[in-house]
Length: 77
Image (cartoon, rainbow, N blue to C red; front, side, top):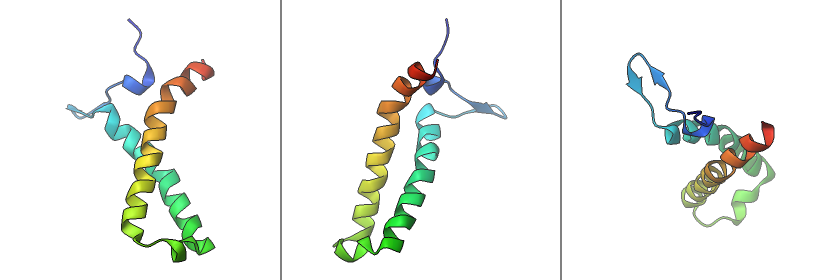
């Protein structure tokens, strides 16, 4: 049976990592770039609670990756 990449369980030195950990690291790069861009643009002047906004931004990006990655891989096949 063929396993899709998003549900592949990577292994390193006998330690298995859940796919959600890999997705979390994939979502980290665009989150850091977006956070840097928002700070450079001065967007955070309009944000009341920056850590709360940053956490929500990361959760939204992470959710997008989890929901869109399987369909994106189907398109690329």
